[in-house]
Image 1 (tube, rainbow, N blue to C red):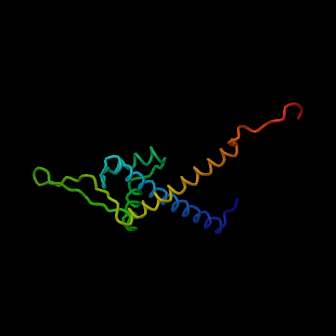
Image 2 (tube, one colour; image 1 turned 90 degrees about the vertical axis):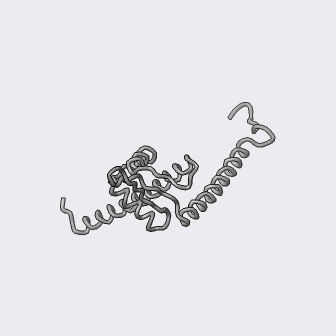
Length: 153
């Protein structure tokens, strides 16, 4: 089989598209995880370790990435104005620095986006509920079950 330059270019573009799609869905999953952690503890911030974020990504979303990819995704979320990160550093005995997990909070744009998603979710939920109710009513009219002819077919 002969691989042409066109084939290798197409393969490269497909791989690039897959990486971008994966990166975008990874960022969405990270946002979900941060939001869930904030909600779980009733705070507007959270401070999970990177190891914990990676564990939850794999456990909940089935996404397994390296720590470097996580840092790229977190940097993208900061650059897009969706989250804010604050490094936590404490001084230990002897003046040594102790690095603690980073604090994550949603930025103003992140909150606006989450509120739009909530509104959209409520709208979709209402439409689905209405569609299911209509479907149920068609199958089970108020007059009782449909009458079937008894006898031959």
